[in-house]
Image (cartoon, rainbow, N blue to C red):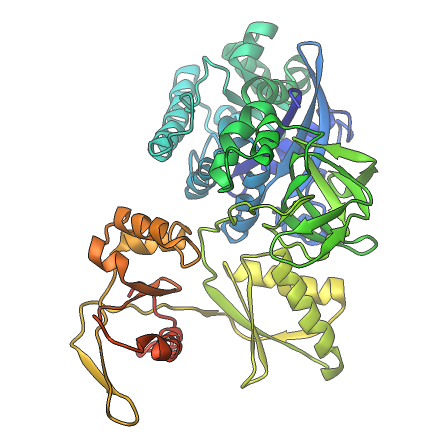
Length: 565
């Protein structure tokens, strides 16, 4: 495990992640050097190649020799488009390091900030690679001084983001900001396959003046040969990213709420390959031949074919049919995958993205929190009624593969509503239903899903029971944003022990008495029971909750869901 590195490449859309992945694959001898950068080997689906963007996170395992030791690098290339942010969040659960790529000309963009937040929330260490440096030289014709200033300002922006996010994180032992001197920043051009960092400059004797000269004279091939990008980046990965033995003791308490004194906690911290199997599924994908493939991180034990494992939240056991590692689009079957790796298995039919799979019954890992909610909805219907059962099955499969998609089947109208992060997200899903499943579907116009919220405290409203013997008094008022955020991030929920919930609500700003009277949380709305000493109230409480949930799902203004009340 000391020689394993689990990393994700993350960035704003079109900053060059997949082109960079190509270079790393070529450096590891897995694809040809000549086509690297144009092949986009990690964009394994046809529609990704057509659109020129990454849609699904893709995994690959490669080896790299660093300081005479062979290292195994499990890499996930993640999408940069905001609509597919869910894939980035899920990938971060499986890895220990994130290589953040930034375009030298555009600098840190909104999605750069988002991917950094997703990484740090999962306790994943960032390093920085500034891509497209060739554009500064050839397009903007910048001199050495200007170029240096521009690169330093990009590093400063990224560090400011990291500092702001890492402030509240107590479990980070050292300073996670990136710097050229430490070797946690690399520069280069993924398209022309060259890269440099402080350690590589010291090793090869190249400096920026040499690079500018070669770049201006169009001697890019020589530049690539003298300082190949893959060596610079993979050296940085081996040196600066934590291995599972360093990372798991820090990460396990952050993502698992089980007993820290237990034997299971020990085997996860030690990355013990002989311990009980603990496997966290971060991605589900369909293979036309192998069926459903569950990919995720092995925290302890060793995965082997034929094991019978529990899947959190479901009864009975699932039997593993095959164990493998992803090589981009290909999946290599192996006999066993030990702890500390990213593996892909078939046979876990009950697993969804976020499931905990283990050889003993255990407290599952924390659910993977997707920051964004679905905002765009489309209706989908089958052109031929005969395809309806197949369409429903496919939609259920889509929801299983991508937790950021919501599928709703409206029984009154018979409509199938599919909600996602944006128009592109839904367009890709419907196109895949058409092309991959061969189901001709008709889609409606995309509509934006709104939310309603009370703006001030209401007057008291009286409701009577049918026999007129009982009266209920209700008021509604907007809730503090901090409490709404805490509910959205999963820090407060009705599943928690009452004492923990009270403390979490008080931390978010609710006063002590109110937090003791929380009766129910529905979406981001809380029902407070302020009654005192009333008998038999619990008999009618279910009906009150039912009525309330109905009113909150269809708000009074525009029948949109209510939040924050």
